[in-house]
Image (cartoon, rainbow, N blue to C red; front, top):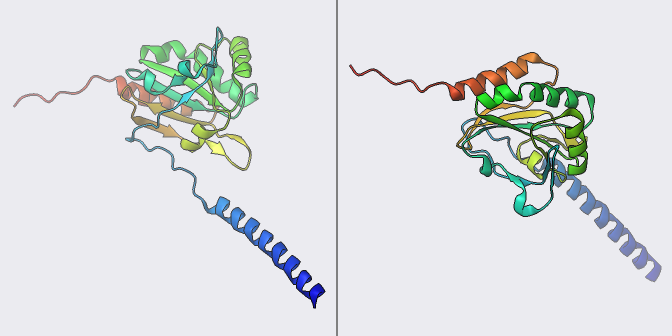
Length: 202
C-alpha cells in the first residue's frame, strides 16, 4: 500500500510539472506582441547606448534618446545584424543619401542587437555618418514590432518620425535592395518639409 501511495505521488508530481510547462508554453505563444506604432501616433521614446566612427557611448547619462532629437525628422532603421550583406547594402545606401536627408531636416538612427563595439568598427569600415544604437535585449525592437522571436534578431523595418515625435511613415517589410522603398521613404520625408498651404481669403 505504501509503495502504491509513493508511486501515485511521484506520478502526480511529474504530471504537475508537465502541465505547468505546457501552460507556460501556451502563455508564451498566445501573449500578443506589442502592436507597431501607427501613423499619427506618438513614437515610443527610448534611450540606448550607441556608437559612431569617433566614439562609443556606454554611460546611461549620455545614451541616445528619441526625445532628444525633437525638432528633427528621424529615420529609425531597425536591421538584423552588422556586417551582413543586406544590412551593409542598407546602411551604405542611407550613407550615400545622408547629405540629401540632412537638407530635409532628417537624421538616421540604425538599431540592431549588436554591441556598440561591433557598431563602431562597422561604422568606421563603411564611413557611416549616423549613430548605430545597441538594443541588445531587443526591448525597443519589440516595442516597434521589429523583432523576430523565432529567429532571434531584428526584422528590417523603417519608421519616419517627425520633428514633434509623431510617426509619419512605417514600412515593416523594408527591402535593402529595393529602390522603390527608399523612394517611398524620401517622398514621405519631402511631404514633411513641404510648405504649409494657406487658404486664400475670400
